[in-house]
Image 1 (cartoon, rainbow over the protein chains, first blue to last red):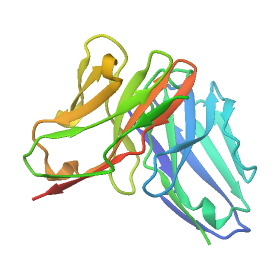
Image 2: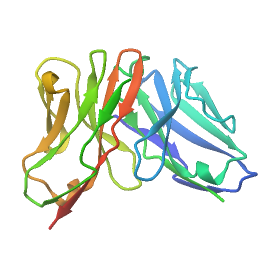
Image 3: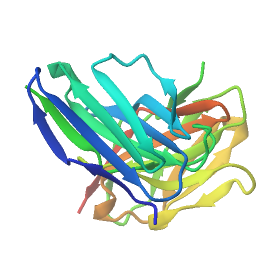
Length: 115
Length: 112
């Protein structure tokens, strides 16, 4: 089973709201990722967790706060977002703790709209 | 700097025709190469990967890709395209210690 699940599928939030995106995998993978994807663009890496520790933060604004409660779960907490943060947010996981040396499996994404 | 190019932004082919999507990379280290497909509003699905060994790799949905080190290329091919293959295709390159670099993507349209 190579499934990564994400909830919710769609999210509309105001600029003063607080919301969370959730991601889950049961493949025993030890690295998990958050990506942001704008329309007609490739995914942009935001965060990498390896063995439940944050290993890469690609200079993402603090209004995005990742959390890895255990090896199967990854959350992205959102607060005071801007309209330009509207995008498809993708979660991925991979077996290896090294982000570039193993294939990544992606979830279906959360379509976020900030009003 | 590491980079991945996909020269074709948009390709249109007729159903049943053959397909080749191009991917070129510039990488200092030994690259690991991947092709992903993305249908509208969906996540990315892994089509195939290359780490080492045989330079012609087979993937899912009838796709294959060939690694040519001398040309720094990893082109994706399919002998007969189906209407359901219409999607965005991303080439990605990784290496040890470096996260994926994605190409800009190629949008495939399929004519009936």
